[in-house]
Image 1: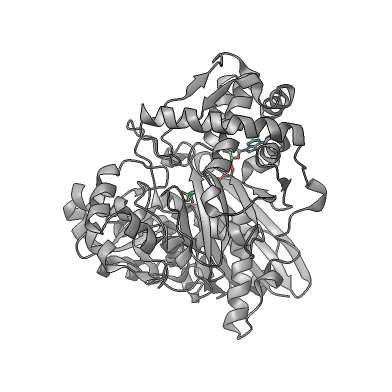
Image 2 (image 1 turned 135 degrees about the horizontal axis):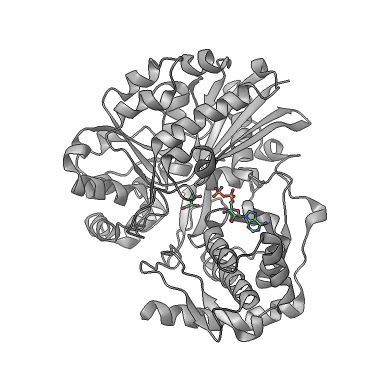
Length: 524
Ligand code: ADP
Ligand code: XUL
């Protein structure tokens, strides 16, 4: 029976899932996760980010991701599973992060010496030591320049699926070109995190898929091709430096000799990698229109499949490519888990105590409220962070805990209306989806049933399922996506949390107040 490996290189960790998949047999036979901060402390990251005095700057290290991949594939190889049956591998990665490689990188990857760790061999091939990641908000000037040169925000959004966003790869590339022109000139290829890690596996430059390519402000969403006006608005000579764009199901090569010799792995097929949200779309089983998932990982995101790209007229959200070949709507919040953690840690509590405090306070918090902008916020755009409290004593632990969770859920509900989905069922995923007290607030704010999943990391599961789908497609069998996700990427019926009508009524009254306070704060 064939095995499929999914990898997920997220903001804070790298996860691997090996699944046995064939017809009705769907079983996870191996799962492992490593934390960048704790397992590779030599890079000095905090929550996966390199410390910087400027709160607008957020970078990580491509060498950290490379070493993590080496450590993880050793674990997979020695995890007690017979990997001679490994048919295919695919991956998921945090979106938007960009990796800059010099000429000669491909030769270094193809000829990597299996007796030495890969990160040391990749190091000389980097034309930029760090990678700006999705938490970066330092490119407002470049966003404005690109918007103007590409014909305005509405056209950019219509063509690429999003107006210019600070964290997207295009504005980040422009900033690099402006600030370090000679390093830009020495750059031969610019990868996303997903296509960089895929390149390491196949030992040559990998393509990007439309799911992750649409997070760059550079891709023509309808054509799945680079959009020349955006490229020209971003940096000179960019078209020569970008990877190819290929469908998500594409076999991009086989596991290179480095991995075969170093870890004794077979020459398995490698399927194009994608972004974590597109992978999670598959891993939460959202292969039809009309359903929504909320992921509470480092970022909080809400997303769903779209058959046709309906771009957000308010400029809040994004339309990305979906691994199914259709599209997905997505709205992203940077103050997700780290904001919840800030409140929890501020009062010195455990998650259990956090949940108890949440359960002990009334829905609506007796009118006490906050705006949860501990760090720069993506939705709505808040470049200078600052928490605003309304009738709320900053020292009152339970009230602040309820206030942050309610604010985040109201923001999720309010800023996802543009997707045009009447949300009646929510598939909850990400680290914080383990917390049922938070999911109770979610159900009551949205007035929707909320479900949990057996597999916590649905982005990683989605990657394994995409490996399965791509492998079958390469053998000439085009599987229906319902069949791909069946049995594993399905919500667990017994986890259902039903909304309480009285609580929902309270939130319906609070929503306009929240909206007004948000609008007022943004004006200020
Ligand atoms: P990512 O994939 O972005 O790295 P994860 O989906 O692994 O993130 O989620 C990690 C986050 O989950 C942590 O930052 C932590 O705040 C949160 N988390 C873990 N357990 C709980 C819990 N019981 N309640 C709330 N949040 C939790
Ligand atoms: C998506 C986004 C985040 C990252 C990290 O647009 O910025 O969700 O993918 O998970």
